[in-house]
Length: 171
Length: 131
Image (tube, rainbow over all chains, first blue to last red; front, side, top):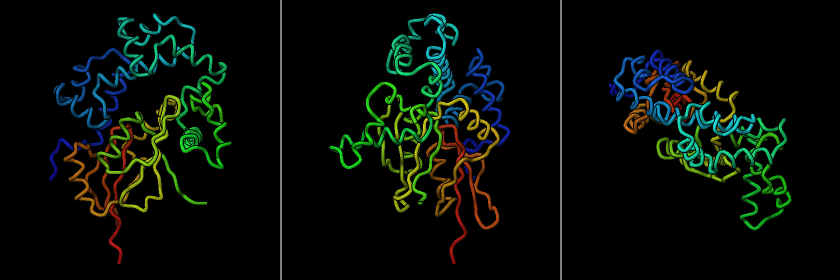
């Protein structure tokens, strides 16, 4: 028999999914989330990471940054308000975390998304999530290889900000 | 027309490439940055190398809702064939992979289901031995 810790029942899996949803959307603490699964915080965090690939804390931070990205791109709320809206208590730590994950400051991110796409296209630009990334990638590959007959295709992946987003909006 | 490429939505592409190569044992074929995402495909060293699996960013809330609902219901979104299911499951468990279904005989095939740490459940199956 395999060690039981490497197997979760359907019921336990559903509980972990509920815990994840709570951690993302509410102020529930890791200890409280763990209690719902009847595991010690240590066991909960270990199992959570084995299932979802991130610790509860990492997941919560990622969810906050994702919400911030969306608010910055789609609304006019000031950066400070966005910071508090998504659950951070300090603008400094929000900006630092945002920059580390997204690669630029919240203000720079907002400016870039807005410069790159008209308002009605922004949702699609935020979430490429489709096979359209292939076009941009293969165009870049062609360029790196010195160009071949497909060089003209690279126009679809030109380095303008809109194309850089690699979004479905452009396809 | 050929089936050359299929894809999986993953919640984090860096994590996914690590899991699919280091844990599952696939090999990266493409890994090209496109804007803030990457075009990543992997191939199986045990296959012909002709079929690529793209690891796509699942940033879209619609895609994520689908992914999470399937996951919570215990439904796998992809299936990979293995030669010896018991051996594979032992190997993956030792690497820390969590299974939601241990090897089970389903008619002529045996299957097991595990979490890929990127938001998906993956079915592994051992086909009936060929006569």
